[in-house]
Amino acid sequence: MKILFSPSEAKVANNPTLDKKTEDILLKLNNKQKFVLKLYQDFIEKSSNKELSKLFGLKKQSDIDILKSINIFSDTTMKAIQRYSGVAYEYLDYDNLEDKNFIDENLIIFSNLFGPILAKFYLPNYKLKQGEKLNSFAIEKYYKENSSEYLDNLLKDEFIIDLRAGFYLKFYTIKKEHIKLKFLKNGKSVSHWAKAYRGKIARELAYFKPNNEQEFQKISFPNLQIREIIKQKLSTEYLFDIV
Image (tube, rainbow, N blue to C red; front, side, top):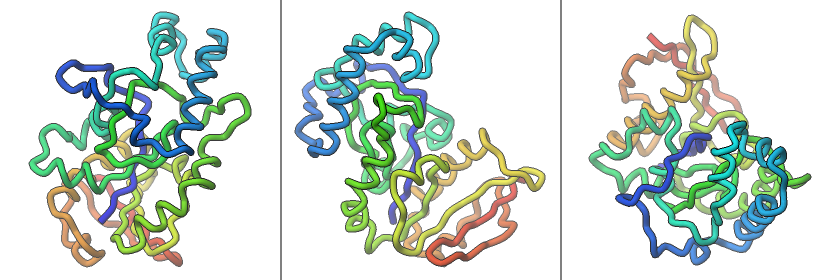
């Protein structure tokens, strides 16, 4: 099984108890990723504070200065699943999982900067607002063109559960049968709680480890009730009511 997941805007700053100081991220990057990272680093070094404010999605100058001072090619790193700290990651609660290895090996995060990476991949601290371009360079389009073949091969024999938010569908189109989830409250789609329940679902999947849709259907997700199952070509969408 593979779980497709979104990153988060919020990240943990470098933590001495988690940093892997000897990690050279360049050794584990392919040339496509290195190309994007160089564009990002060059943009940071040459851009005005106004341009960086837009890129980072930040207004406070002290926050901009901290990120501006980071060189992503030499900064200390930590595991991606622990670097991201948004709502979904809070509810996934990786640090308290019994089987961290399952998430490490089977959760694919679609980073705005690094593209599709496994949860175990080590990342420096960085900030890139969702959908922002590096000058006119569209990162999501680039990764879709340059990582789809890799993902096709990685996922070809896997049971896939797609927990990505809508924007991250732009990075990759799944070309085989898969499951999508949607969360409703009083019949309406929710935003904040959708993030929370993506994290909760990922946590339950790490526990039950379903290998097919039949095993997935047997899982009783807390506070969720299936409203409808919609089958469309390659995707099966589960609509859950939050109860």
